[in-house]
Length: 299
Image (cartoon, rainbow, N blue to C red):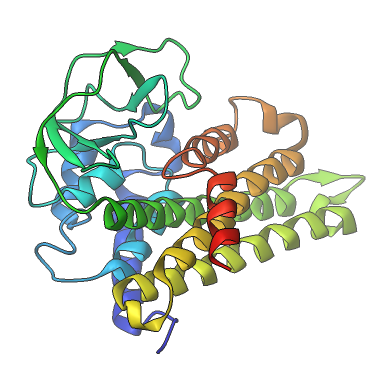
């Protein structure tokens, strides 16, 4: 069993990156999500990889890594999980947590409720928008009650696939943060030389790269295992991938802010968008503590 992407899979990933570089460059990031961007994602086949192209979670993880690298906002994971069963964007609700908070509720057409007793797919209900979401490009709404709809899918499979895709987004975020830190370190000068020549900054960037590649290796292994359970324990592999990806994204975001110095705390550079997005995804489809406990129980 090979855990490295094939040339066809790499070509798919490169193609998605080219589309996103043109449709959603960094300078457009503060504008957030709009209908035109979502249409581009749909036309590119981001959400129909499995239903139309008969591809697996390996290919999906590579595509979602690119979505993370571009910091694309929106109900990405839910729309992939419910592709073919719902028309339009699909957001996700985990009813085990209170308060009942849902992202991109106003934009989504359907809501996927990950109820442990049986997932349900329902039209989006009304909710109260929160005034200060953790990510300014990810609006949050609070629901008064858990809506009911039609039965949809297997909860264990949906949970594992959702966690894997969220991990892929986190790996993409971690990789782009490494690129931003290195680029800034090469261009920013202090004492007449680039700060990237200072050993302390080199160590920070090197640690960022190591965290990213470690998380990426775990992500690829988990995707292969999820596509072919005979390879190993898919639940354990996904838990490990999500744990490492969350750590890579959140730690790399802090490191990138540190490399940028005072600029890293301002809206003048896009680092804060990546930082806040990493924080947000670290709470989705299980926190680091949730997956660490799951791994401990499976060892």
